[in-house]
Length: 115
Length: 115
Image 1: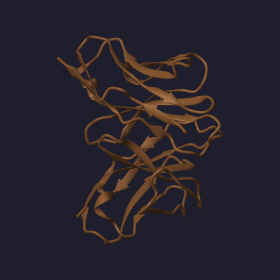
Image 2: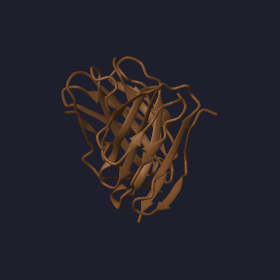
Image 3: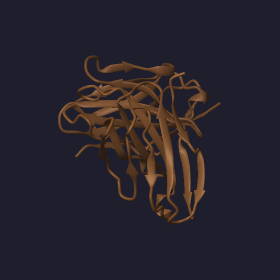
Image 4: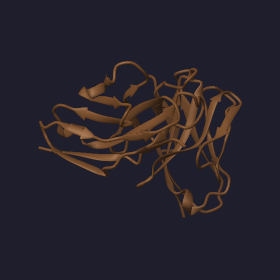
């Protein structure tokens, strides 16, 4: 089954404790992206990657890191989480073609609480 | 700068009646427009997209959307609503000439269909 998986689905942590949210897709997609969803703000892009070893900042990258060492994986790293990073996080992937008109496939989400 | 507006936080409609969820956008150049739906505790699912061509786009679950360039709108419609259509709907846009940049989402509209 074609899918985007994220782990963990739920995480409660404390300020300053480094964490990683994993994302994996099995569709051989070039493009992957991380979003955060907050009430009244919709989805905002954190980072994206157009292919292996190619990453770039989205609209709200502060406090986050990513890496793309393999095509299928795109982990999101919070080196020193803070309470304002409490949010619902989604990973997404799509084929990458010139013009970027392909729809994105979303993972099930990771609900993160930082105390 | 690209932007998307969904002017209604919530739309209420009775089952069997037609529904419209509104979306307006602002981009430089030609837009790529998308609608996604989010059911409770789930990731976003792609409904339909407009790239070019016919202004009336048909998508999943009986939904359609009409692209109106002069009004910069891309309203989502369905002739007869079902209770199971109740969900959170997001409109999103990307400019044709900005490959690799963020897909900009609206803040979302909650659709509530009553029986």
